[in-house]
Image (cartoon, rainbow, N blue to C red):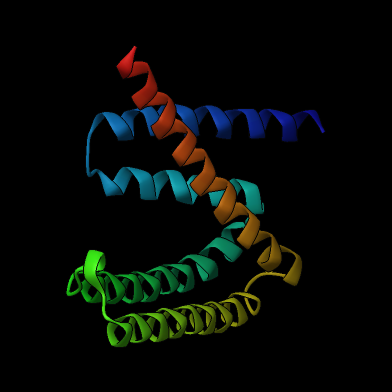
Length: 150
């Protein structure tokens, strides 16, 4: 129990120090990726063999989601949102719903692949860990910018 608490404390400290460094150097995506790998590995308690199978699948998952988000951003840039017609609004609503469906389909596909490498318990925990990581990054970012304003 004590060993696990020490590991968790070290992971959290690495996370905080790392995010501070990350936000000090804009657009340093490699650092955030390293933090994510360490955070997920710790929180999911991945063994080395699990990590070896998990990370290639997860990286492809992120690439597919990133592509989907890029396509959505490109579409959104084509419209003037202050003056949308009913036709354009319907089209955007339809594409938004399609985007959400595709996001769910991609997630289901990759979670099925991940559950072949990790237990269902760890695969389920992955969704929570992803949200925790995002919230922590947002908190760190907000804290850093609020300190800069004072």
